[in-house]
Structure formats: structure tokens, C-alpha cells
Image (cartoon, rainbow, N blue to C red):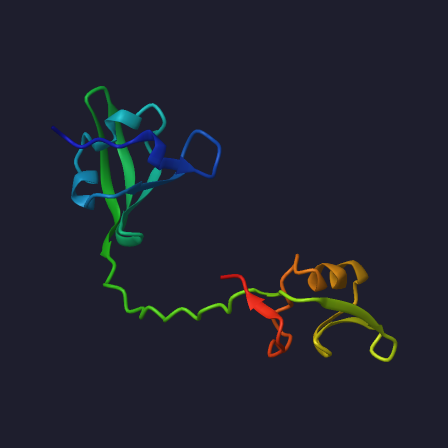
Length: 166
């Protein structure tokens, strides 16, 4: 059985009737795309003079690309010629970077008290006499002190009465 183009993989960003630029993505090799009957299933959408940029994508990476020109459209075939040679993409040179572990969210687990600090013009959340968070919003300070909202990530978290989400 001959491979055929899939309508859902053919798209254009232009409108008009002649000389459209189409993009086509396949997960197979471009050898199949170059056969005369490959675009038979989408012949109603393409016209003579249209360009089709074909890209083969496998495992989330472009493998090959080329550009075709539709030179003839007849009932039994759609003839295309390669206007830009098939370009094979070299293997990836990217090195996967180790992911930075995000610190676990930390919550106040014992009695926290929000207190207004007029010098800093902020509410400080205190646990066992130590300030564990400072925020400008009163409601947020009460939520942090009650253990409903995690501590802001930049705050010191060395006081007793602080626990992680895990």
C-alpha cells in the first residue's frame, strides 16, 4: 500500500488561489513524500504553482526537510518537483542539563503570630519568637501564620515550628 498525505498535517497561513505556501509534517522519511501519488488525498486543497514545505519529525526533533513545487495536477496523480534539496538535520548536540530541584514548600506548623512592624511597614509572621516571613498584605500574613499558605521562598526557614509539604 502506498503512503498518502494526511489532510490534518497540511496547513497554510495564507489565503488565495495561486502560489500558496503550504507546510506539511510527517513522521516518516521524506522519500515517501516525493512519490507522485503521495499528495493525491489532499489534491482538492492544493493547486499547480503551490509550494509545499515538508518536514519529517520523529521523537520531537526535525529529521529532514525539503520544499516541493506542485507542477501538475491530474485525476490520477499530483506531480511535484523538489525546489530545494532534501536537507538532513544532524543529530542533536544538546546536552540535557540536570534539573534543579525545587525546594519543598514550607508551612508554619505550630502557633504562628502575624505582627505589624511599623519600621519595616510590613507584617511579620513569628514562630517561637523568630520572624519566619515578612509580607505587606495583612490577609496573607494571617494565612501564612495559620499554615494555610506556604512561606515565601526567599524567607529564612530555620525556625522551629516550620514543616515541609511532604
